[in-house]
Figure 1: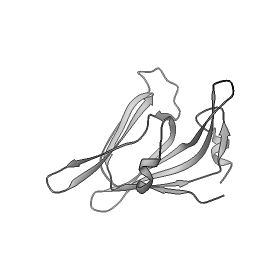
Figure 2: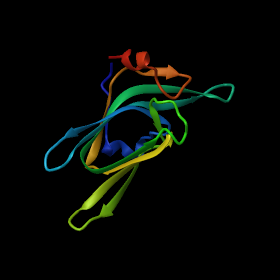
Figure 3: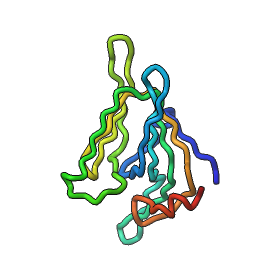
Length: 150
């Protein structure tokens, strides 16, 4: 498997539209910060089909945000009467906000299904391939597809 790594330097060329998050975890760091780690299905390419539909080239990745502070997480499966499973994000937004002693890099992940949002400050991110590329009719991978390339 070719080693694929992306960082915040690649942010402008990347899209996380309709990517599914399978897991999230926090790893405690120093000085009150830590890493926020997301296991997600990264859609590399939307392939337009002859009949007007789409197929997708997807790769499982681990997306790690570094030196995270002040996370806010809201995911409401009850409001959509949704079955529990991976949730889908609209994308990843970044903005810079002036604070009293620093300029914060604020990251926001609007969740489109079910309803919700994740927002936090972080210094940047590293996204690493965690498996093989799969061509799929759906926008997310099954557990067996996620584990097939590792």
